[in-house]
Length: 315
Image 1: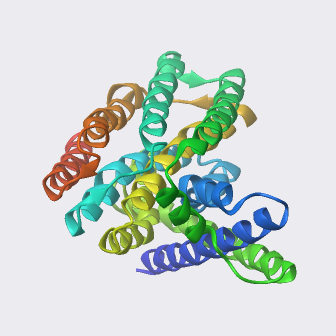
Image 2: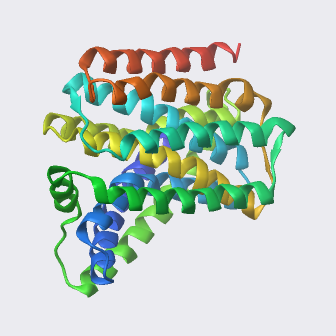
């Protein structure tokens, strides 16, 4: 029970730290000259990945590479299946942001690229650097394309980036966020090892299931609330952008620092599952530009099926 208590405490600290650092980053970015639209766009796409980044950095630091890898890829499946599915069930998601379709394509290509790199059982340092470089190129292309967004979308994004506070307050937010993310990640990684062992899960599956699902729960709640407010672009942007960040920056960064062994199951099951979610989601975004409750149910049921399959394969 103590391990579960520390796990929950760690998740709470990660959620608070992620919220604080997003607000601080928005304020500092605008003070450094970034437009509210660009600041908001970056925060929508990648801001919610910071708790996962903290957990993975801690796991990587203490030598739990498999847990970190499982969390990075498991978070993507949780994002696309559980978060987006439950949000659409709460209220149909109307998608107006033009960047989301190419961002989803980037996610699919990133998943395929990672799978190809892992065919030999390891992602090398050169391949990790390539993934990081691919993220930079993708980011520049998306920012260039962002100029075509309609006024209503721009206003919504700028409103998301709006933050108050002097420079010292935004710097303080960073300091507080750093402490919260540090201790949150520390508690989650330490307790996850004990929880995984008690459930007879390997470090990889511990990252894929309890850690990935646990770190996503605050985002699930936020996505449901945003869906009810009619902010479909925000929900989809968070989900797709953070998934790209997980693959290119988190996995790529780990591999760039140290060759990253890739379990065989990743090439056979986890990465193909992530690609399957992208293939299911793409026509939803390209069709009537909305994710209906029925489509949300499909995504959520597909996620449940994936969890059941992962558990069944343990036996």
